[in-house]
Length: 208
Image 1 (cartoon, helix red, strand yellow):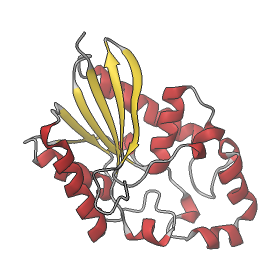
Image 2 (image 1 turned 90 degrees about the horizontal axis):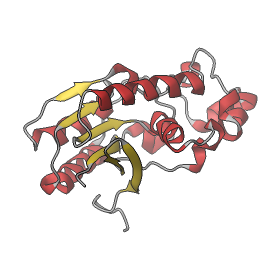
Image 3 (image 1 turned 180 degrees about the horizontal axis):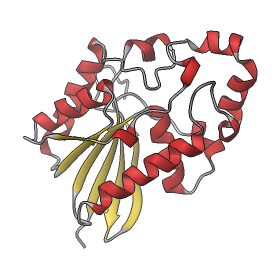
Image 4 (image 1 turned 135 degrees about the horizontal axis):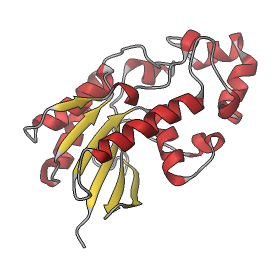
């Protein structure tokens, strides 16, 4: 039986990742390590066929996707609804400062995210709905045998995987998605099966 494959890729590292601050919809570029990771990702995909590459419009994801797509002579399809969770007032603030200024919401964010809505930001339910719809539209644009890479973000990616696996939103932090990691979903004539998860063995200094 012929199968299609969907690769869910998290963007490469940024300075905000390194400094442990909330990025959300702040349009932060890859740092030098993130660019190295994106090039390593493209090298890993050298012998893996791709029919299409999709990305969040935020530049950290789009640049990661662009470096990958260039090696396949493909363009990158921007999908606005693949963007990261909007963290509102938390964006640009490091984790310790969020804990100091918004302790109750930070507790909810880490322990019961389904009940969390950062000041001026999105609910996790709203984010999950938009990434679910974006994923469904991408799949509908291709047959079941397509090989597709989707480059997105850590929070939004976790919510997409919770939806895919039938897990409640409050389990989202039980899922790890490292920078430039690849999670693989096989499509067997419409039957979607998780094949690989958070694979980053190909990255420089990955330790694997």
